Image 1 (spheres, rainbow, N blue to C red):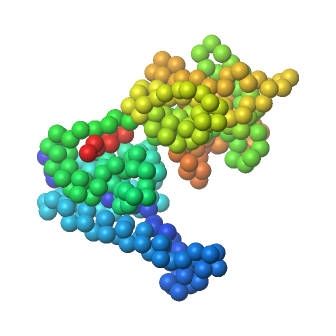
Image 2 (image 1 turned 30 degrees about the vertical axis):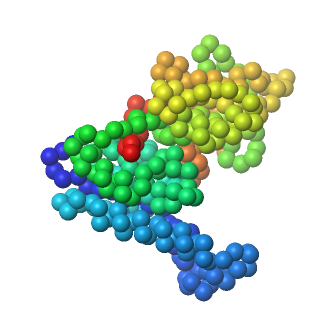
Length: 298
């Protein structure tokens, strides 16, 4: 760490109540809106209160000599992280995945404001644990999980990083058409798209695919490996379905060439709005990323 006091970057996303208030202006209108859908405002307010309470308690635990800044998820692409930052994500697991691609090795603490409701795979810490770990991070005595990330590089120089998974396919429900190359094997496919998942992603989208296909594939979050899965590849006179899955390692990348006239996209970690165009002729190389997510352990 730098000799300067660290800066704590607290990353959040709008609560459901904040989102609804921004849309409907008053609490009464929010309550009416929810009531027309058979819901009450009580649970929405309770989750909001848990988030606000966690933020208040966390801020009180930041060392007095350290600086602090708050960032919403929607502003991450415009925020400049410094090498000395200690990043605290308060919310659900997806928030950590959303911010991972903007970091370059900074320490990340994932804090759950509601451990009873959230999975806590990437947000395993309580507010109290995070407070006790600030000095350990500054003194470089904290323990970390170095979670593997994946990268998609287009032949025009654009790239995209992901902690959970990368999706390559069509932006609508049309079939994705592409040439898949892995090792010595190449195949033209028409499918619902291709998912490339890290070990972290094996608890998400990939878990659903593995359950449905009954494949027994293991991959840990710190393993220097990822796996690709073609989603429902269609065997026909032109397209094949034999290259349906495989491993990506430091020595074995995945190459995909688009055969979609328009509408082809590549996006990461479920954020469809942040995508790379992947139309006819574009070529993507999917590799393990050099950077990893430095997630602070309890």
